[in-house]
Every structure is written in structure tokens, then in C-alpha cells.
Length: 66
Image (cartoon, rainbow, N blue to C red):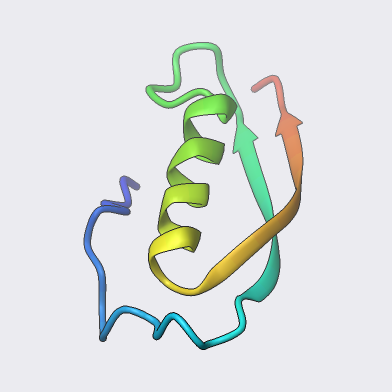
């Protein structure tokens, strides 16, 4: 599955609105996967900034496929 994080729904948050704190979770199951965990984190942070969220941490998992 590929998610296009550049697509936004709804209106941009107002400057007065307090950002909602969120943590991110990224996963990479094979070395051949197109997007590394670093790329996923960057995309999630960009999405969060555009949509009124503030990332305070992330969980990163690398899994080897059997």
C-alpha cells in the first residue's frame, strides 16, 4: 500500500489553534522497501505540521521478513 501524504483534507488549522501532540510509528519490513523509516518520519512530520499536529516522538521498527 502506498499513501500519498501530500493530499490534505479539510482546512488548514488556524494559527491560534493549539497543536495536538502525537507520536509517530514507522516500520520497514524488508531492505527492498521503497521508503526507509527516515523518509517515513519526514513525511509524517510534514503532514503533522500542515494539519495542526505536533510530533513529540516516534517509534521505529525494522522487521526482517522470513
